[in-house]
Length: 329
Image (tube, rainbow, N blue to C red; front, side, top):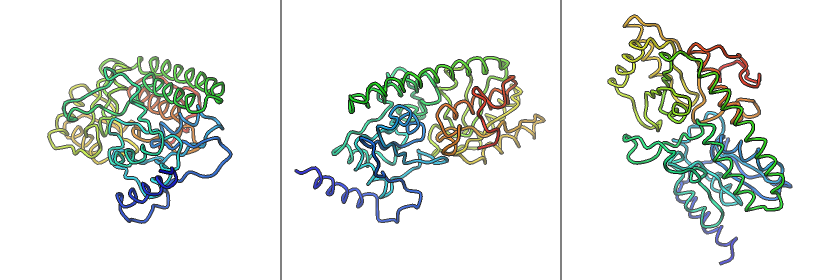
């Protein structure tokens, strides 16, 4: 069957599948450009890495902007059109984009579709018992694991566009150097936090890979997916931890409600212990586009610096590269 006819048929089926709702004004679409080919990505963490490696040889379009929760994201008609027209589709996988799985399956019949976390050994992944046998998808919180993902994206682009290999190799080498420097900064900044304060309490359980890499006890009020709900017993258990360990700060997230964090602070106060909000962490989405925090390096630099400072470490306000805005996301 002719490829264009096949795409048209699949597009029609896909539109029927996702419903007849009007497209959101913020929907993304692949635009015409002078680039050799097009890449469509899901989360900002993948989009930024793909742009860094591809340079000007590919048009990279991200479907999810700042503040979008990938756990809850459903594809729109414009998203399906973008995916169908792409030469390469990159998504995180591990059920992070759980409501897009059917769309990826359909698109994979006409274009190259890759779950970037498939490049990781399963032994590297967390599989919490409460997650029904699925792996924790928040791999980007470990910079060295995300560097492996970047290397997979690099290899994918080289295979698709061998003529671009010299550029991709150069860009990947530069990116790897930056990620290694980020990891060194994190190890030094977070390593200076007193042992008794090395507890990271957040709105949902997105920081297990971060905790393993930098030796933190990580406590998320909600589970790995933001679709889960925290109960009264969860709040009471964490309040007890805060009071017993004398934890000074807890953290909200840019894509999750502050309600449960506020309940923790109130519960600790009732027991005579003051807990502050250490700031808003980037968990499932990066900062605003065209800002330092809107890059992968800037996102993690922000988190490292905020956590280290709130929990007692002496770190520069402007972070590793002196580029943090200093304002809450």
